[in-house]
Length: 162
Image (spheres, helix red, strand yellow):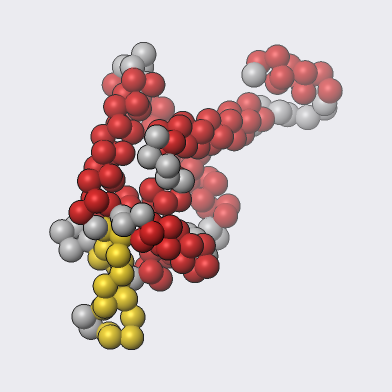
């Protein structure tokens, strides 16, 4: 990264490129983080988007049922994309649609017992792999990194969610 920054500085000596390393590292972190997540899910034959549905349902609490539209707003997906994800998960027996008790015209999505078991297994593996990945960092370093990442994420979210 330092060599790349030096190369850009030589190519554009009139420019202040001090923000470039942070933005390049942020992009690279996103790509590698996504690859790490995909690698974790590979053994379960799930896409990150599919797991995000299971995780969102888990976070709903004891009832763990939510409407498809609430899911696509929560996960920032299109309704068509959400329909495809739910169909894949239903085919695998991980979620099911149940009638909405307050409105018979709509349905709610809930995890099946198999879905809850799989989500729990993936969550535990993800934590284990994350701990292994970050094992060389002290708790203080992890906290510092998280604080900095929150700042960067805030900048990007303000830009894209104005």
